[in-house]
Amino acid sequence: KAGVTQTPRYLIKTRGQQVTLSCSPISGHRSVSWYQQTPGQGLQFLFEYFSETQRNKGNFPGRFSGRQFSNSRSEMNVSTLELGDSALYLCASSLGLTGTATNEKLFFGSGTQLSVL
Amino acid sequence: KNEVEQSPQNLTAQEGEFITINCSYSVGISALHWLQQHPGGGIVSLFMLSSGKKKHGRLIATINIQEKHSSLHITASHPRDSAVYICAVGRTDKLIFGTGTRLQVFP
Figure 1 (tube, rainbow over the protein chains, first blue to last red):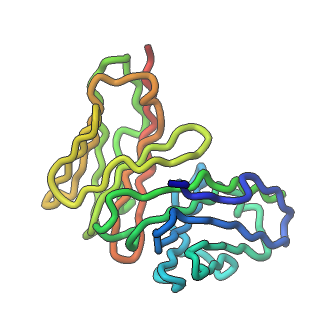
Figure 2 (figure 1 turned 120 degrees about the horizontal axis):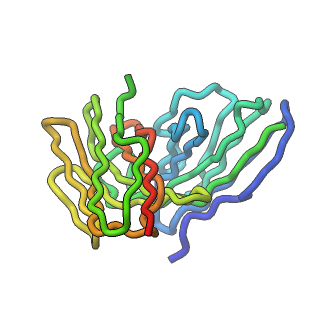
Figure 3 (figure 1 turned 135 degrees about the horizontal axis):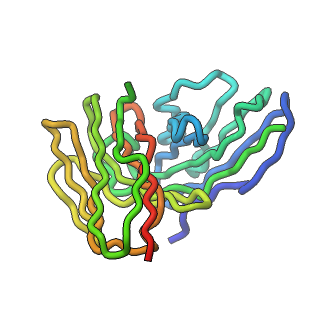
């Protein structure tokens, strides 16, 4: 069974640019959630998609957005990049919503390391 | 005060030692996850707990819902256990993460 695939693995952008990251979940999983990890703030929840609908959103500005397609693949977009957006962006897939007790395990991708110069 | 607190922040051990990592939370939860992150970023899900205790190999995780506390134990620790261990509590709307415990096990 293929794992969670995130592309690209590394990305370098300059301030003001826009970026799109992709996450392909495990086959059959309907939930994809996104997280930002930085040395200072640790792991923070960005948003979660379930069956193509955004179910929850973390405390991030509107420059961070996402979507989920009918095959459960998800993309997240960050517009007007700022230096502080430099981080590891991780996605996770699961059968049910991540916050519930329906998931025995969460499956994380390897992440996209974004550097904003 | 963070909603999820882990202790200790850093832990060093000799191979073979028994290790305990603690997680306390202040919010109502649906589930609690223990995660392991090795250098390079990859995160592996170790356990999901909604009550009681679970064991997998040398790893044991417990949760006390009334006391809002969970522990992760590693028996007979090994250098390959060196990683960051993260507690994450699940609410219906999201996961909230602890800051992690960095474990180093020396041979």
